[in-house]
Amino acid sequence: MLILGIESSCDETGIALYDTGRGLLAHALHSQVAMHAEYGGVVPELASRDHIRRALPLTRQVLAQAGCTLADIDAIAYTEGPGLAGALLVGAGIAHALGVALGVPVLGVHHLEGHLLSALISDTPPQFPFVALLVSGGHTQLMQVDSVGRYTTLGDTLDDAAGEAFDKTAQLLGLGYPGGAALSTLAQTGDPQRFKLPRPMLHSGDLNFSFSGLKTAVLTLTQKHPGPADRADIAAAFQLAMAEVLTAKSLAALKQTRSRRLVVAGGVGANRQLREALNAGVSKLGGAVFFPRLEFCTDNGAMIAFAGAMRLVHGGRAAGVFTVRPRWDL
Ligand code: KG4
Ligand code: ZN
Image (cartoon, rainbow, N blue to C red):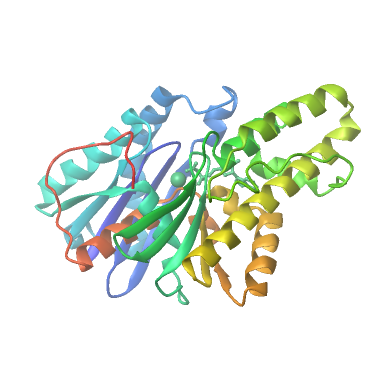
């Protein structure tokens, strides 16, 4: 069964072809990051217009890469939500139009389910059950994943998402948007011990997160130490605090669920210091950490095609109705 996946929930147009027998055949991505950078954040209307421009050329591209034609497609999976309403509507519109034209089922997929399962697009996938740490620009969640479709939320952020905290801190340090990766590069040249930042919720006794206090602490620091030489030290202190909190809560989640497998998904999962801290902590527990391929950490079409394929393989049905869900709990 060949599934076309379409992701358009935010600022990335992702298209992919996943074959249930042969695996991932092709995927292509267009990131709008450069387009939104001058506005300091994603402009929803511009995002929608760009998805419209990109989706069909990318679809042609993946078909050519895979050596397939539209007639080979057996089903279409698109991101139904959560995300920006207009952006989601582009993917939903194209998916349903193609579905009608080709006479194939169309399936709405939860964006976070795509992230949760993205580490399974691998030759050495983690076995179920596992704990997933989902750290993106919009979400920070710890989830228990028992099998396809069986997900339990263990912890969530009470305010900012981890990526949002990185981006807002990066902005305070004058690093532009989205600044997570730039902050990480700057932190490499800094002394993480010079400034002591709080570790929010570290001892809260639950698996929830809160990052807005950390951001406020950084703001105060940047006002007290505005020199360009201080910025690297602030970035390093911030990154260390984030890595420590995310690692401590992930380890607590593994202990609570008696699991030894941690899957990390979402853009912040690309952070080197976080990866090292998680690897060190989890291996001390005798467990293993699984990261999706770097290109599948951030938003992409492959995870949507894959999640759609898993749904169909496990008896899921296409709803056949045209819907998007900008707000949608998993
Ligand atoms: O998963 P993602 O591509 O998009 C969402 O669905 O939100 O995550 C993007 C987020 C941004 O906040 C970005 O700053 C952050 O991931 N990010 C990083 C790094 N690379 C991307 N944060 C910290 N360190 C990085 N190396
Ligand atoms: Zn995402």
